[in-house]
Image 1 (cartoon, one colour):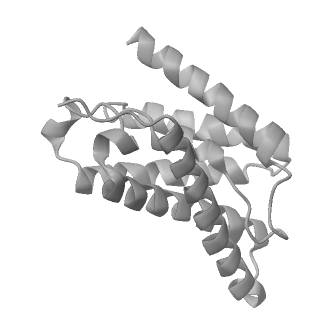
Image 2: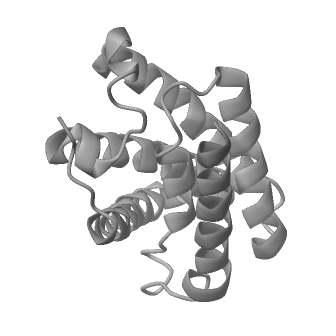
Length: 171
């Protein structure tokens, strides 16, 4: 248990530092903006309680909001992403599989499941974030383009990160 807390704490610090100090100023004409920090919420263990998941998601988003001056937008998007994560995992992962697969990682769950999981959760995060940020029906096309391009960019970075720390499933 202590090992899980320490590894997730280090993961949180590294992802937030990467987001704030490296990825904050990277983007393609404000159309494609990477948000790699959401990987922290994506790979939290299956057995985590829902209340702790919501608390960690909110705190993660609030931490990014502090550095981005975004007034709670990331906190709201992360909290909704945590809700979507709960629904997705309940629909796709068998209950007895929690003992065998502790985390939703690429090496553990497989490429097809993980990319679908990452895409759905990243899209839900970006949809809330960019919709609340813009909040104009007149710019719906532009907002949708930002959501799609940022989702593709973020999922690409998530996959690169997962492949960099890839560990084959031990069976």
